[in-house]
Image: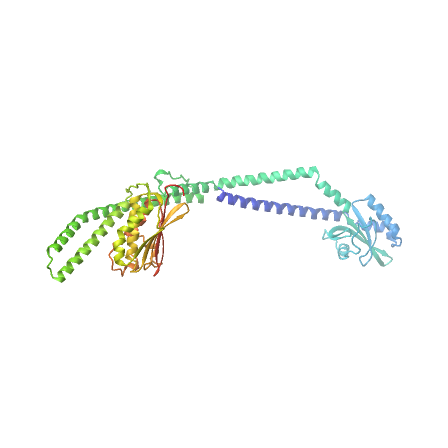
Length: 491
């Protein structure tokens, strides 16, 4: 897994390890260089003083600079690790032995020289390298007097340019390379060992993560998935695993209880609606018979009788919808998929509402008019869906409005859109319009009869045909319902 916790932690550990190892190597190399410089400077600290005291050209004062240059040349041949310079009291280089162009500086800083002469306890002390503007080197120094007059300084660089080049070539030799390889192998072995230990420590966490993913796929049904056995250690991951087991057992018990209660609710609704149908049908029949046999009833009695018949019809419609919704939620509804012409179905549904829409002063439209599209779905359930959506649009569209059904090819599917120019739905109501117990606020003043379960039934029917309904609405501007159907063949 590319983004697993172990991968992230391993990369982090490896990065920290490499950075720490690099800093350690840099630090040890720096300490080694300082220690080597301190030892070499301490070892050759009296070199310049002995040369100044033992050589006649320097002991009695410098007069012959050419002879002194020859002396420096001889000394450098005998000791190639050193460079010799004579510096006047201002820091100017007076004489030295070097090929033309090798000496870059004409002056050096005398402060390090004076510091070393006065205090030799705080080594190493670095001075200017006459042959390089950027480098500092350890040195030995001795003042040269002519009588009581300071004539200059004998300035001896410890570690000449020749010495540096030879030492650099030795560092890159095979022996150094082999040592470096062994060092890298040792560090690599240490890193791998740490990663193995780390993987062992994090293994229970990976096991727990994999188990939770499996539980999620089973929708928390642990009847088919055995729980992991976590040892009772004081390890925090084991404690977490045991807590997860207890949590899953509790969740599973609660889900079983909710499933049982939901099943009982559906059965109760189905039985209740079924039991209410017979007495309601009998009541409606007697009321209709009474209304026909009393044509000369007074106006008030006739009005009450008509109101009773109307409410009886609404109650019957509500009971039918409750029964239908309970049946859909029971999971026992059959899906009969077949190939049919979508345009023919749409025009058939529109024809059912043509007279009602004409009386209400509402226009019904289909786009495109030549709606010749072949789809693969359940024709009966799609007919019920369109019927519910158009009924809902008629209830909330005022006189002079328009209700349209549009078919659009989108993402290799036919998108069906039912649009009205009605009162619209508020943004507060929009998330709840498909709930069975919810009645939008725009229906409160509606004088047209409706049971209120049409959209809940529509949503469930659309789920059964493997689609998804989306709604857009704005108060005063209308509402748009949209869902997609699979074509009978690729388009």
